[in-house]
Length: 359
Image 1: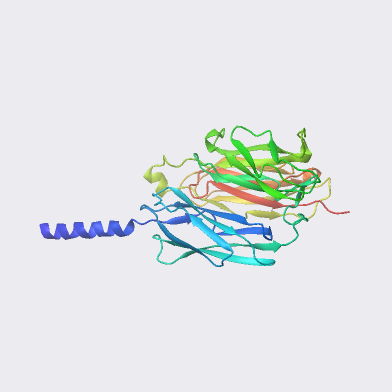
Image 2 (image 1 turned 90 degrees about the vertical axis):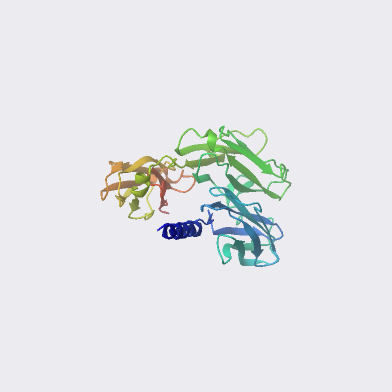
């Protein structure tokens, strides 16, 4: 009998050892860079987390061409910890490109491939493609700052590419930064026709609450510039709920949100029109689903949800209305964001496509 128990203990230990493995989970496996300037190296960063229960070790990272230099977190990454892989792409030819980065690690017996793609342009003076957002003679590649699905303790960065098309030197500055945001321009001064970037960093410890926090910052276009709607940049941060205190019963019987669609498209509206569509929210899980927070990201949208707690199997109708009067004043992407108690989908976004009908 003792011999049988001894053998069973060995087998049980072997099963546990086999189950304990590192696991690498990337926030993005594919990155679309859009337009890239020829002979203007761009850095692509892939963030990852060891979601396994053994230390993760990356032994080698390869690139698909000599135009890309790679680097990575070389020390072992403990379970639950984060790391990064970077690729510096220096375009050798004009036109479309598709590149791969291969990750060799102890979480997979095969290499894991990451991708990035875009188009190289040679016109360094015409920034209308690479920097489509104009603030006078200063052009940016984005018209809003988004920190999606961050956790307490994170310090994520958001890059805004900036180009100076004026005939004077320019120092990129963001005004009216709240305490949880900081910004740094690289380089600090852009000469005529030159480009750089503004790195915006979020301190999640200073966010006022879990869920959605919204504010605006303002781009200084020249010394002494003032804040106004014409230089406003909307900012949003989504701090995910903390699920670390869930019991085993709650983990095994979670709520589960299901949407009839995550994107709505409206026909062109007249300025004085408003049109509505519905999204059906269903709880397909085993516990009550709670919509803890919901916000629209611009003044052209209005929402109506009469029920924020759904029992298992229950559904509710979310009415989303587009207001034609405000569409022309929209900055950023029209969307609705919900924070829920579904551990697998704590944040859900519904994107809305709408525009004013041309006369």
